Image 1 (cartoon, rainbow, N blue to C red):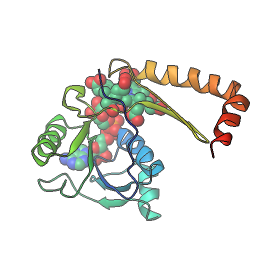
Image 2 (cartoon, helix red, strand yellow):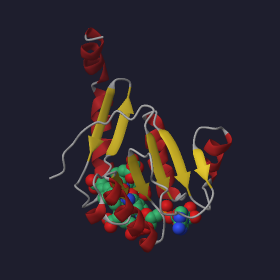
Image 3 (spheres, rainbow, N blue to C red):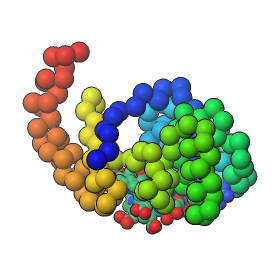
Image 4 (tube, rainbow, N blue to C red):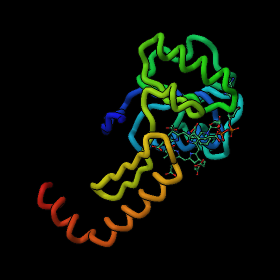
Length: 161
Ligand SMILES: C[C@@]1(CC(=O)O)C2=NC(=C\c3[nH]c(c(CCC(=O)O)c3CC(=O)O)Cc3[nH]c(c(CC(=O)O)c3CCC(=O)O)/C=C3\N/C(=C\2)[C@@H](CCC(=O)O)[C@]3(C)CC(=O)O)/[C@H]1CCC(=O)O
Ligand SMILES: NC(=O)c1ccc[n+]([C@@H]2O[C@H](COP(=O)([O-])OP(=O)(O)OC[C@H]3O[C@@H](n4cnc5c(N)ncnc54)[C@H](O)[C@@H]3O)[C@@H](O)[C@H]2O)c1
C-alpha cells in the first residue's frame, strides 16, 4: 500500500520533463499547489505555451540532459520516450529526489490520485496504480456526494475557521 499524504509545495521548485498532455495535467496540479514549475521539453501543448507566455512557468526548450534535476524538490518524467523517462528516474534516485514516472508505476516514488477540490475540502482517490480510470470515476461519485451534502459539511468547516 502507498503512504497517503498532502504535500505543502508552496514556493518549492518542481521539474517536469516532457511537454505533452500528461505533463500538462501534472503542471496544472502543481500550479494549484503554488509550486514553482520548470518544464524541460522541445515541444509544449497550447496550455503550457500559454502559461510560459504568462510567466506562470519556466520553460527550458530542449531535450532532457544530465544535471537538469538540480534543485528540484519533486520530479515528473512525462515524455513519450521510455529511455528518457528511465534516465530521469535513475538521475532522481541518485540525487535523492522523489520522482513520478508517467509510463512506469514501478519506478514511481509517488503516484498521483484523482483529486476534487472545492472550498476547504479536497478529495483524493487512488487505486494504487491499477486503474486511473476507476480512480477518476470514484472521485466524481464522491465529489457528487460532497456536493449533495455541502450545506452540512461547510457548516462544520465554517465553525472551525
Ligand atoms: C488519477 C490521475 C492523476 C493525474 O495524473 O494527475 C492518474 N492518471 C490519470 C489519468 C489517466 N491515466 C491513464 C489514462 C488513459 C486511460 C486509462 O488507461 O485508464 C488516463 C485518463 C485520461 O488521461 O483521461 C493511463 C495511464 N496512467 C498510468 C499509466 C502507466 C501504466 O499504468 O503503466 C497509464 C497507461 C499509459 C499508456 O501506456 O498508455 C499511470 C498512473 N496514472 C496515475 C494517475 C497514477 C495511478 C493512479 C491510481 O490509479 O491510483 C500512475 C501510476 C502514475 C501517475 O501518473 O501518477 C489521472 C486522472 C486525473 C483526472 O482526470 O482528474
Ligand atoms: N501517468 C499517466 O497518467 C499517463 C496517462 C497517459 C499516458 N501516459 C504515458 O505518459 C507518457 C506521455 O504521454 P503524453 O500523452 O503526454 O505524450 P505526448 O506525445 O503528448 O508528449 C510527449 C512530450 O515529451 C516531449 N519529449 C520527447 N522527448 C523528450 C526529451 N528527450 N526530453 C524532454 N521532452 C521530451 C515531447 O516533446 C512532448 O512534449 C507516455 O509514455 C504515455 O504512455 C501516462
